[in-house]
Structure formats: structure tokens, C-alpha cells
Image: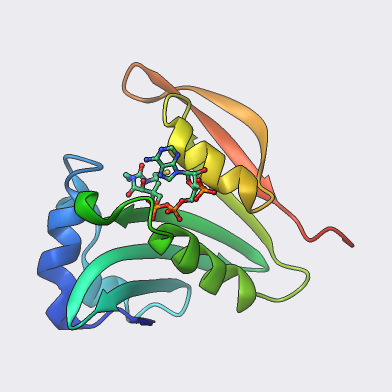
Length: 142
Ligand SMILES: CC(C)(COP(=O)(O)OP(=O)(O)OC[C@H]1O[C@@H](n2cnc3c(N)ncnc32)[C@H](O)[C@@H]1OP(=O)(O)O)[C@@H](O)C(=O)NCCC(=O)NCCS
């Protein structure tokens, strides 16, 4: 099941997020962020265990996918797709989606492309020595 982040999830989210960025825990103060109307977070949970999460912000019809991580033991079982789909399905038709992804993270790039994201820009050395693609998704009829 997919639901909003609750306080009891922070520990597991920090554990999963730290696999993605060293400074993940310092970046996200959930108690503060979740009081902001623009900040959102969802977890995917199975039998009471959190197996993945997605963080995003919504401002003026621009949705930024900030982070998405699935438990390494549970990858390639559609959990990431379900989380992303939940955000896209609940968005407004005119909303545009943006994200940054490491140019070497082909698995994530493939997933985003399957959801209609397109590379629109490269940010040099965005992740230390690594570049990032900025990807955008707009509704087809926009
Ligand atoms: C990226 C990530 C969230 C994807 O979540 P997931 O639940 O494993 O992905 P899904 O099972 O929904 O797969 C969606 C698509 O991603 C790609 N993919 C996922 N796992 C893959 C793997 N092990 N090998 C190759 N492609 C893979 C495939 O294109 C897949 O589509 P398919 O099922 O038709 O093959 C997950 O791999 C992850 O947590 N990675 C580490 C964190 C990260 O890099 N986050 C993105 C930061 S921008």
C-alpha cells in the first residue's frame, strides 16, 4: 500500500536515503518539511514494512521529484513505478514534472523514460564529478 509519510517512517527512510546521498539525513528535516504545503512524501509499505519512498515538491504546477528509493532487496518489482505512478496520477493535467538524475544511473533513467520523462538539459558536475540530466515530463496534450 502507498500512504503518506508518518513520523514512524523517518528511521527507515533515512536508512534507505543514505544509500543514495551521504548527506541525506541532513538534507531532510521531515518534522519541518512536512509542515510545508509544497513538500510531500509517500512510502510504499507491505505488511507494516516500508520498502520504498518518494519525496516531491509541488509549486505553481511544477512538480519536482526530489528523491525516490526502493529497498535494495526489493528492486525491480515495480515498487518504484507504483510510487511514481501515484504522484503522476494525482497531479493536475497542466502540471509539469522535473527531476535530476545522475547520467550514470541508467536504471533510473530507463524508469523515468518509461513514464514519459525526457532529458532536456545536462548539469555539469552536479553530483561531485558526475553530471546530471534534468528530465521533464509534460502531459501529451499540453
Ligand atoms: C530507481 C529505483 C527507484 C527503481 O525502483 P524499482 O522498484 O527497482 O523499479 P521498477 O521495478 O518499478 O522498474 C521500473 C523500470 O526501471 C528499470 N529497472 C528497474 N530495476 C532494474 C534493474 N535491476 N535492471 C535494469 N533495469 C531496471 C526498468 O526499466 C524497469 O522497467 P521494467 O520493469 O519494464 O524492466 C531503484 O532502482 C532504486 O531505489 N535505485 C537507487 C536509488 C536511485 O537511484 N533513485 C533514483 C535517483 S534519481
